[in-house]
Length: 237
Image (cartoon, rainbow, N blue to C red; front, side, top):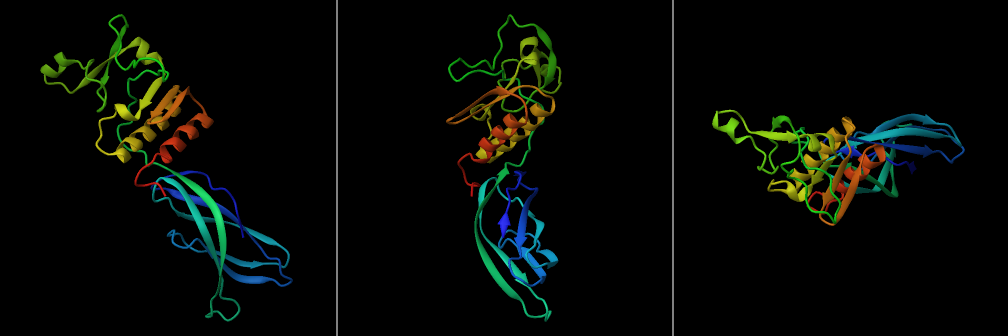
């Protein structure tokens, strides 16, 4: 059994792990089934593997919790040729796979501008910035730029947006979110990472003991999601 690296999946989705099954014997092996015990996935069936050959299959199972998970064993079974007697063998493994937090929350990007770990926060913009309109208020943001006059007229919470903020990069900060639970914060940050990448807007990420500078692109995308996945907490494996 030779498992290959699985691509990261989001919690609630499905992990797909390619595995190569090698037949090192001199006889054809038939009626083979492969499964990862305890993962809730279905058995993968292989009709036969000729002597000295290999078959490549893809095991699929639910991505239940964020974090890095380790597969300790694979189980290979066969019911051929009798059809009702099952022969089973376990193979030890140290293969791991990564599950990102389940994206959820408000998809609208926050108004935080990127900053370095050594600079002062720039969440709130100065009076000199050009007014660029309003947008819906995102829970967890500073309330300094809420359009309170509109609220007094019975309109929903709206945030004043300024040109410097509209054109700059997005700063995603764990500590700036006012959710009660860490998992809710991680899910919101994961959604914002996806949205910022989708619109190709540079974004930074700050977690306790972790600062990732503003950037955009696939490597940056997965670096941020990996940091969210490995955040210490109850869901980590």
